[in-house]
Length: 188
Length: 188
DNA sequence: AATGATATGGTATGATTCGGACTATGTCAA
DNA sequence: TTGACATAGTCCGAATCATACCATATCATT
Image 1 (cartoon, rainbow over the protein chains, first blue to last red):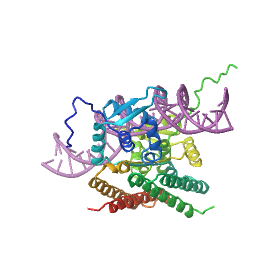
Image 2 (tube, chains in turn red, blue, brown, orange):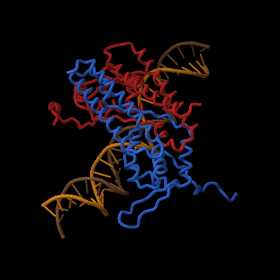
Image 3 (cartoon, chains in turn cyan, green, brown, yellow):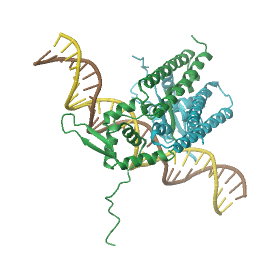
């Protein structure tokens, strides 16, 4: 099958999850970072395409450090922050992942659509209210994306802006969809 | 005085999750159903908007039956299938949910986008391969949606087709997006 | 009749993830 | 000196997940 690097001895069969790659990748992009740094970075970007609770950003780097993919140094004074840096092994792990076709994951989880699915049991008012609310929601989302796009001065490659672009398109599709639902039912 | 509130054998504060509503809603749509029936129905529809493992479709109906929202009757012979039906309480619970604004949940989880986010560390070949694969993936998805739409003869209200329509639009947006990624990098 | 492939129908469980409450420390301004 | 706010991190029970496993029916082939 694949061709693992033989050089590393006794090391660990650490299991790398999507969150692992988020951590490795972000540290590679940003340089040495604290968990809090990562948390903020995630909030402006990856969150929209792979949500997870921030607490994992405190647990996961420690795991990766134990496995030798990161190093950590802790401040000795007041805050005692931990700063994580990428090791060569970490860089390799990231590259391996980027070079391999990832498992296909494209999951959508939309509560409003679930309700719509059972719309036969709603009355007209409920349905239009739902649709209206969804238009609002996705319109907001679009604004947020646009805001982020503006505030992110085009540093270091436009690649980081691409995901935002997809998010935008998807939200636009949603706005169109729900607007048409509204139109079809008599608007109020 | 001699009647302390402490014993609450009466009704239970059962917590209803999205999966609960899937079960209640599907049984309302289809009539009395077995877990297996639900499983198949989910596979053709809700799965695309709220994925969850099929084992929950065996656990959840039992919970709901315990709480009095469903009734069950088990075959006495061979297969001993359990058939679940909606009670009035179940119907009420479903209606309550449909009448209330649901918590806003719109989560997207896309592994390919995560890789794209770190595309700075890919070489051109890897990126085009990723994009090509995504075009393939979403094109397939579109076909599947269209197939389902065809095979579902327009029974009982077009409402059940609406979610499929949104799925279609989103996948189309994805195809467009990844195609443009391909175009921007020199195509091979 | 025996084999085996496939669909049906269901259970069990350890591992992961989730979510969010909780505890602090610095910082700046009123 | 108070209080608001951002920063920084920990913890843990609850919920969800994945998936392996078990079992019965059906039908086609040998």
